[in-house]
Picture 1: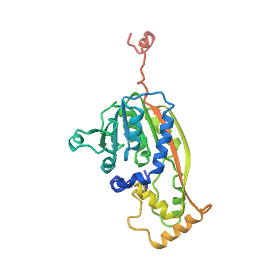
Picture 2 (picture 1 turned 45 degrees about the horizontal axis):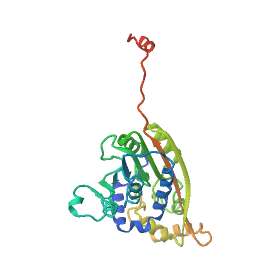
Picture 3 (picture 1 turned 90 degrees about the vertical axis):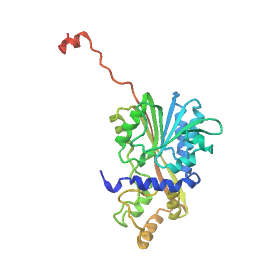
Picture 4 (picture 1 turned 180 degrees about the vertical axis):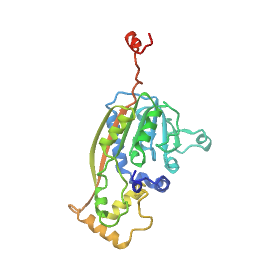
Length: 296
């Protein structure tokens, strides 16, 4: 493992906690990708009884899934408790103590603080595990996929989106020759994700990707948006202090060489995927096989 690119979970939790109160104002891309996932879900004829929104944030996806599946029980898990405070509807304190609260339409959701890499739920408890732009915050995707498979019911669906390696390539390029620190979180290739799904026992994985490019007036705008959604660099290899003025100016100058039609691009490689938890494999022991095994 490259520890320079290992996510510092403590810093990540703090970053999302600070971002929570104003997250929704800046999370335009996150909502757009969630909507595109929902559009894909419309083509899958499946009605889960329990839905786990893994990495639920301020609850946009949770609420959309509740409206789509009003009869399903909804579980929302996020590593930052402050995100849940934004997601939970205003209800009396005595109802919050019960752990499950409803929105104005009476839909029910349970909010749980936890990490996707160690999901604090029982085996086979969910029919659908939904995760919008959260997998990139996991250090061990194999462990994460094993946990998702564990909590899924047999025949259950895992549907997700995440960022690919070309995400923020402009920012990475701008800092490439400035210093040896990690300035951008690392992202996993789509094909590697598909391979890991298969190796973790998922069936018929479907993967695709697209590029979404946002444009900004200046580099400060890019960094401001990343910080506003808690998505700035929290890797172990990041610079612990402030980037020096000279280094920062060099990075801005490098980024400025990418300006087109008066705007600076910020590219996001968006990966979409879904896969199923299959029935366990069974072996039929025929009379001939029994004889071969010496069991006859």
